[in-house]
Amino acid sequence: MTMNSTRRNFIKTASVLAAGSVLPVDVLAKANRKKTSPNDKIRVGLIGVRSQGYSDLASFLKNPEVECVALSDIDSNFLASRTADIEKLGFAKPKLYPDYRKMLDSKDIDIVIVGTPDHWHCLQFVHSLEAGKHVYVEKPLGNSIEEINIMHKAAKKHGKMVQVGQWQRSQPHFVDAINYLKSGKLGRIRTCKAWSYVDWKGAVPKVPDSPVPAGVDYDMWLGPAPKRPFNMNRFHFTWRWYWEYGNGLMTDWGVHLIDYILYGMNKTIPASVMAIGGKYAFPEDDMVTPDTMTAVYDFKDFTMIWEHTIGIGLGNWQRPHGMSYIGENGTLVLDRSGWEVVPEKQKIEAIPVQKNVGNGLDLHVKNFLDCIKSNTPEKLNAGIDIGRGVALVAQMGNIAFRTGEKVTWNDAKQSFATGTANSLITPVYNNGYKIPKY
Image (tube, rainbow, N blue to C red; front, top):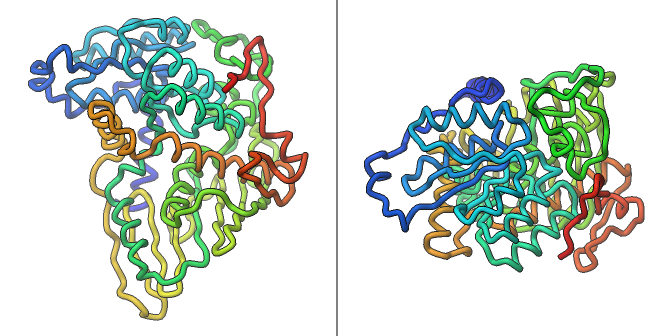
């Protein structure tokens, strides 16, 4: 698959999601589903049905033991359309809950999928664990360092199975690439890069505040975020470009890609981070998070460079996204379409592109289900520790950008060396919501 076709597929998928169309569940194995004992059924409830949450659910439903018994969303329009989608696929109609807290009261749910905007992850994750459910939570784990740590503590306390939606951890060609990396053939690695260049996204033109759309519980959508008038730019999909709800491309694509740098290099916390960037592509549009950014992480024995830009699609190695491990003998280049090795002055053998095989999200979900059935949390491909580690690193990069400072993290104290950076660790919850205590 070429990089251009990868980008076209992304756009096509995004269009399907935006239109509310049915996502194909092409491996339903109906005969096996009928043979599954009621005692072996795994019942799933989804919070956040519009976009990635529904993609996650579609992958769950490819497993014959899974039933979707509940959907929750603040937008009754999408609740209705997703219910119709599920019924068209031949499944029973799930129960519908405008308020996820009512859904969690149900004893008929084994797993909760959290597919909501990032500012809701912490509360819904913790409440799901407290209700005795296993949780599949979308990345990034939380929207702040404090939330990430709370979620980590809650998972450890309640002992339920948790999988974070970093599905590249289950993608076979990513695993093969890391196995090659760990062979040592690249020699000593002095720098790594991860990047996301997104030409499929343009400016977010400013629009005036407007009435709340019919069927939307906007107060519930805001949750702990600051109270403000409804604006379409801060709602479906584009919420990601505002600090109150998300953390821009760094925690969108960055969490996926930086994760594999940390994994491949066997690192967790950098010694220091500095970052620069801003709204260079669309300085007058409505986005708040940077459309152009470079962050440099110092791990003392190598550096990691993260870079992103919006409106340009040709990144490093002519790939719109990816990672590279730059060694003294050669460079390993890895993205969602495959991996290859480019030798340094013919010191090692070149390896042509090894193409992606399989659906990473499907495999990620299956790994989660298998671990639940076998009670083997140690076999989770992206458990709570992995989700926490990369989310912290991504937050450090954003905090370095927002403060304009070189930041250093004290992992023992869970704080930065400077007060300015520390002021961004803990979010302020609004509208009567309280940050969980763990």
